[in-house]
Image (tube, rainbow, N blue to C red; front, side, top):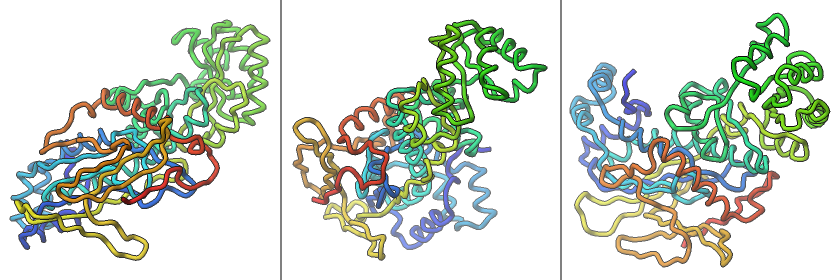
Length: 436
C-alpha cells in the first residue's frame, strides 16, 4: 500500500476541484472552518483529538504515480486535473485548537486559509480524523473523570479496524488513559503499553495452577493473573500461593463486579496479599466505572465503549467554506454561509476566545466574527494557534512529543471547566457559545 494519504478522500472533493479548474475559480483565496453544530445528546463538553495525526497526514497528501494512474484509469477527473494533482503540495496555513482542548458547538476548532483547490480536497481527511479521534477522546475524558484518579487502560483494538485501533489508543491516552494494549500505538505515538494473558492461556494448560505458574515464571510475581476462568475464590488462593504476597494484581473480567470486588479484596487481604491490586475489564463505560467508585478497584481496562465513543462514534463535525476573495485581491473578504434548514452556518472569518472569570473558571465561548484588519479585544484565552504556516508544519505537535503535549493541555483545559461539566447525567453544554 502506498504511503500517500491522498486517496483517503471522497470522490467529490476531486470532481469539485476538476470543475473549479475548468471554471477558473480554483485559485480564489478561501477560508474554511471545521466545527460541530452540536454535542452528542446529553454531553456537556467535547475534547479535540487528532490534530497531530492530521498534520502528518496532510504532509503525506501527495499524488504519486500509483495514485495518478488509478485516477486516470478510473476516469475520476480530466487529464489536466491529474497534471495539477501531480504537483499538489499544501501551501496554505492552518490554525486550530491545540489538541486536547475542550470544544463547544459553533466554535471553529480548525481554520484553513488556502486557495479553494488546495483547501477543498482536504475536507474528507480533516473530518475523518477529527470526527473519530474527538469522539474517542471525549468519551475517554468522561471515563477518566468517573475513575476519580484510578488508572484506566485502553484495550479496544479488537473492537475497531486496524488503523482506527491505533488512533483510538492515541486519543484515549491524550484524554487521560494511562496505557494501551496496542503495540503500534506504543511504537508510533509513545503510548505506554500493557497486557499479560487472556483466558486462552489458562485453557491451554492442564490446570489453572500450571498456567499461573508458567506466567509467573515468565513475567515475575508482579504480573497480573486473570482469576475468573473457573472459580474466582480458588483461583485467588492458587495465585497467591504461587506468586506469593508480592503478586502484582488480579484481573476480573466477569460477574457482579461491585460485590465480587469486595469479596476478592477481603480474600487477598486475608492471604497477606494486601498490596495486590484489583483490575476490572468487564464491558466498562463511564457509567459502570462511576458505579464502582465506592468499590476497592485499583484500575480499569476499557475496550468497546472507548473506541466507539461510548455510544457516539462520530462527533458531528463539519467543514465549511465561510469566506473567499479573488486570489491576490486586497479588498474585503466575502462572507458566505449555508441557509439550509437545520444546517445554517455563520459566514465570515472567526476568532474564538474562552472567557474566564476571576478565579480562572471558564464561563463562555465567545466567537468574534472579524474582518481583514480587525483586532480582537477580549480578555479571554485565545483558542487558535498556528499549526501549519505557508505549508510548513509546527513540529511541536507531531509524533510522541506532540501526544505528550496534547495530554498535558487536555488536563489544563479541563481544569478550567466548572464542576457541573463533569456530571454524567444528561445536560446541555456547560458553556454557552456567544457570537460577538
